Image (cartoon, rainbow, N blue to C red; front, side):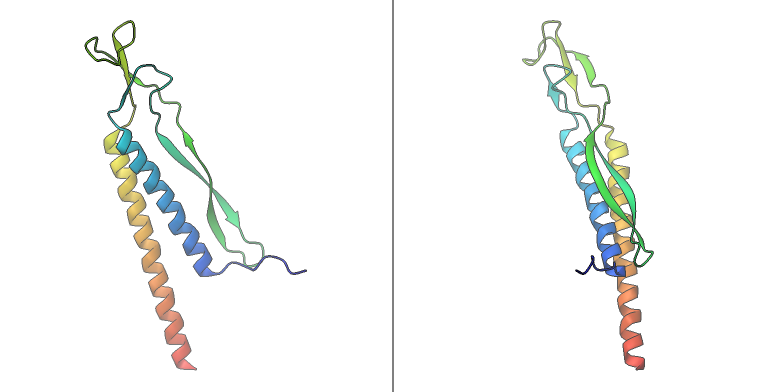
Length: 136
């Protein structure tokens, strides 16, 4: 019975690109929910954060990333006294999503740059492989 196939450079790059997409999607979700208001603290949106782990391929020694999960933070929702809001509780308070829009934009830009770096590395690897094949 054969074991799993060893990882290639393309597998490593594919996982890296997938990880950056997870980062971008989490930030996009957080930005989409920024400014949302809930009637209770428990119902308020909490930002998402992806958690990554290193994974080592024993056969090749290549190290890559895997997504362990995407989790909600325990950030405290923002209480606002707004008795005229139809969602206000008995005290006249509403609960807003604790999303830092500037930090989310930075996260999204960083993920986008990292994704582009992997794409460029893959293009370089592809070009080197093609040039190597032409030498034979």
